[in-house]
Image (tube, rainbow, N blue to C red):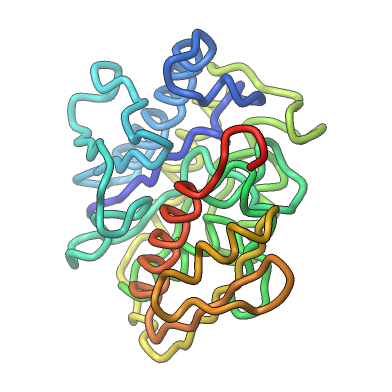
Length: 277
């Protein structure tokens, strides 16, 4: 049994503030240990439950945040940027039996600690086939296309509620409770590690490849905080204006859909001005 862990940082234990997740800051350095603790607890739980292999895919910012030396020696970690499927890289090779979303968060425009979808502020909303989309929902659809179930999600309490919409069978662990976008009631790392490990051990019973979802059509709509960002996004073939500060595109597969999404966000990031956005 091989489990893929997609590891993001905004939903990690103790994280509530931009500096907590911004590489290079003292707070980020401190919170890396909390992030690593969450991921390692999930891996230990999967091994407890009978997994043979755990591959951790770093999915936050530079994708170089986890402390490799603090992970269980059986774990392998995929770190660094420029991966075909970004946050769920590794799921496409046919040998993954389940995926866990560790340290996830709610989507742009929704309530939640550090809520966003890919870009911290420039994207104010994302919808997949008319449903407001978090990174979890987008990535779950990619996983489904490869027949891989989502079996565990951790983050704040609202992230766990969001997961019920795209992975209703998955175990969830709330490591903190939402107060505002930049505040939460947080559990200690010792407590969250124990909770995550126990949930992961139980979640392994849900692992097992499913019939791939291959008959979908996926329309993604994005809303930005400035008109020029929407205009910049239309440089990507197939992306067209769909409303004020909005663009949309339709893909025949989520493989194509998530790669187009990645292209849009890359171009939009380059169009953001430092002071005016």
